[in-house]
Each structure stands twice: as structure tokens, then as C-alpha cells.
Image 1 (cartoon, rainbow, N blue to C red):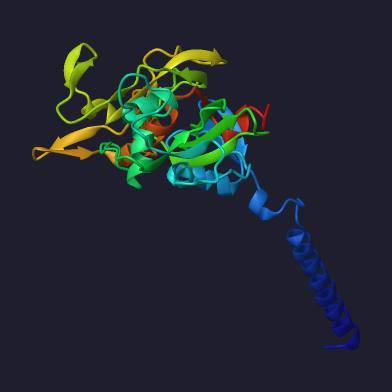
Image 2: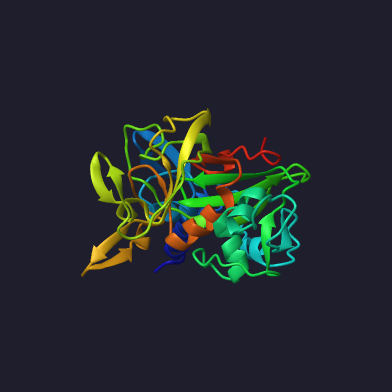
Length: 325
């Protein structure tokens, strides 16, 4: 090969290499400065588009409804035992000593039910404190025994927040001498079945309701009328029932017919079995379900005090007095 041809051949190779390098450089240049783990995904929500991050997409796929989940750091607590343990530091309870003769009871000895009425504390609450464990049936008292009651001189209210996207409930107390509500415990809950015709997206309504005083406790073989039929009530409501009383604000359905109750029991081979697996799912007719231990615990605390329940799609939408108002 002559020198001129060799030089021409080398030039062709050189310019070709430069061109190929330019192509690779161009293709490796990012088209956006957004980190790859924040690239939004679009999920179809009944003809509405919601933009969420991949991490939230995974969380939502594990749930039946396609509700939005905020990135808000959610509070967690479990201070239940502070309500029942004697000499507790929790300011809404006090430990008292049982005396059969008291100046506020005239004409006869005071029994556990009298103490419950006087201190506006449920018999179940006193029994759990008295027994030192979640035993709500044994309610025997002996002179000098000590137990907790809710403070009689405090204006105590309870507040429940239910997040329908997470099947979770937050339990707070509010007292007139506290600057803000105090979180006592978080509970998993079961909610109503999916319902595209409802503004909430399921049979459980949204909004703020007060809880009523037409409460009930059920045992095996306790019968009642449900949907016009005589029914063993634990197969519908479990062992406890607290109804919604009235709408307070921004509700999507009337209060009537809704409530909080335990998980239903089902007979298997002649034995009543608690169907606790419905908690964390969307299977009820619209009521809020808790496991039997959780429902009996909550029932023992809140039934003697004003209680509000607020049901929201996402915890960030709640209007808890003193925090988010």
C-alpha cells in the first residue's frame, strides 16, 4: 500500500472512532436529574390518575383498595398498661383502696358497680386493674384491695382516628389540663367491603361521629335480632358492640347502623372460633372491627366517657384537636 493510501485509511479509522465515541457519550447522558427511585408511577384509580413513588406502589399492591398513602411519619404507642397498673404515672387515672363503707354511698355497702358509677369508670376497667390482667369477668372485691379508676375531677374524652388506607386506628385521650391529646395505643382494624358507588370507596363511611351509649356485651348463646332474624350475636359482632351515635361533621353516611365491634365468631365442629383473620381486611358491612382482645380492652376504657371517632382515607387528613386543627 502506498503512503497516501495508508494515510487516508488511518484518517477514516480515526474519524470513525471519534463518531462512535460521540454516539456512546450522547446515549449515556441522563435525560433528567430526578433520582431513579423517585420516578413516578401512574395507577388507575377508578378513572382518576394518582402519581406515587415505586415504594408506595408496592405498599398499595398489598391492599385491596387503591387509596393514597402519605409519606407522613405516623405516631406509634402502646401505653395501655399505664391505665391499669397501680400507682400509675398517667395523669388520667388514680389508684384507690376499696372500702365497703364510703361517705358517698348511703344506706348499704358499696360494691364494685357502685365504685364504677361513682368514678364514671366501667366495671370492666376496674376488673382488669384489680386482677392485674385482661380478665373482665372476675369482679370480686375484698376490703383493702387497690385498683385504678379514671380521675373523677378531670374532664376526660377519648378520640379515635381510623385510616382506611392502612386499616389502622389511633386511640388518644384528651383532658382539660393537657395541652395536646395523648396517644395511648394503635390498633389494626377491619373495615367494610369495597364499594365503588360510595364516596369513601368502601362500605365504611368517612367523617367524624360521636359514639353512643347503647353498648352491648355478648356471650356464646346470647341471642338477638339482626336484620330481622333471631341470631346468636357473637357470630355477627363478637363479644362487644359500641354504636355510632350521631354525625359531627363532613360525614359521608348517617351514623345509624354503624359501630365498633369485635371479630365475629364462627362454629367449627361445634366449637365457637374467633375469626380474627378479618382484621386488616375489607370484609365487614361497614363497621369497624377489632380482634376480641383489642375490642374488650378498648370497650373497658371508653364506654363511660365521651368518645369521637374520625374516619379518614389517610392519617394526614385527620383533624385531631390540639394537633392538626
